[in-house]
Length: 230
Image (cartoon, rainbow, N blue to C red; front, side):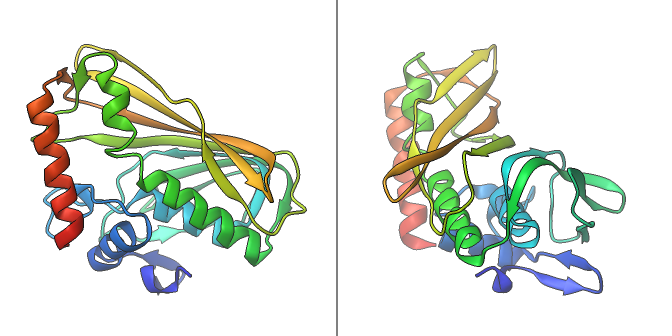
C-alpha cells in the first residue's frame, strides 16, 4: 500500500517531493500547499509518517504520536527497533516521537484498514471541518498563508482482535488567543458497527484573523479548484 510513497536508502527511508505530494493528493485528499512539489516550505504529510510507523510497528492498544520536525525530501529517516517509546529521526534530529503500550497486532488487514480510514478522515478536515469550526468564534485562517500544522495525535483501542476499522467524527474543539489557536479533532473507531476505540488529532493554527464570508468563499473556491485541476 505504501511502497510507492517512499524509498530505501540503505537503512534509511527517503521520501521525494513527488512521492509526498502524490500521497497527500491521491490518498489523503489533502491539498495543503505545503505538500506541493514546488512549495518553498515543502514538507512531507504527517499522515504519511504515521502510516509508515503503523506499517513497521503494527497497532497497539494505546498510541501517541508527536510531530516534532518538518520532514522534507532531504530528510533521511531512521526507524529504530520498536519499544514503548522511540523516535523517528533524521541526522539525530527527532521528527516524530512515538509512545505506545498494551497489546500489539501487526495483522496487515488491521494496519491497512486503520491507515486508510484515518488518512481519509484526516484529509477531509480542511476546509469542511476547520473553517466552520473557527467561524463559530468569528475568526478564520490567513487565506494568503493558511498555516495549519499537525502537532500530535493519539489512538486508544479497547481490543485488538479486529480485521477492519472505520472512523466516525466526534465533536471537535477550537480555542485561540491572539493570532494563534489550537484545534482538536476527535473521532471514534468502529468495527462492524461497534465502537472499539477513540482518538484525537491536535493541530496548531497561526495567522488567525477576523471572519470574512467573502474571503472564506474565495478560499473554498480556490481549494476546490486545486482539487479539480491538480
